[in-house]
Length: 130
Image (cartoon, rainbow, N blue to C red; front, top):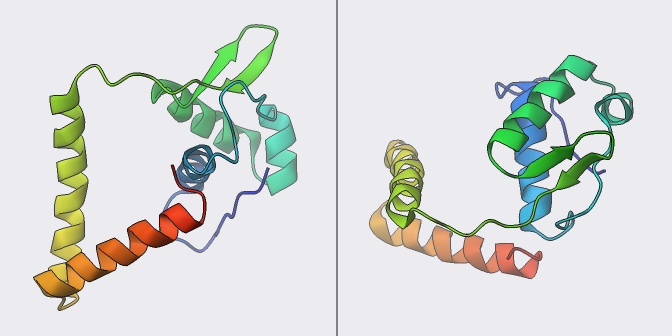
C-alpha cells in the first residue's frame, strides 16, 4: 500500500495513516471489498509501531472507511448512503471555515480562493478523484 508518512510533520503519524487511506479510497486506488494489510504487515511496510497502525485502523473503522470481520481480516468498506445530509453539510462547512480563515491569513481574496478551489477540483478529478 502506498502511503507517504512524514515523521517531521506536526500531524500525528496515526492521523497521516488515516488521511492517506481515506485519500486512496476517495481516488479509487483502494476499492470497497479490498482486503487491507494486517496491522503488523502495514507497520512493517511503513516502519511504524504496530500500535500506531492499530490506532489508525480503529479511527478508520469508526469513520466507516474500513470494516473488520473476525477471523477474515480488514476490508475497505462500501460507500455508505448519507442519512443525515444536514449533519454532513455542517461538518463540511466547519472544514471550509477553517480553510477560509487560513486563506485570510495568507492574504487571499475571494477571487483567489475561488480560482484555487476550481484548480484544486480540476486536479482532483484529473488524478482520479471521485
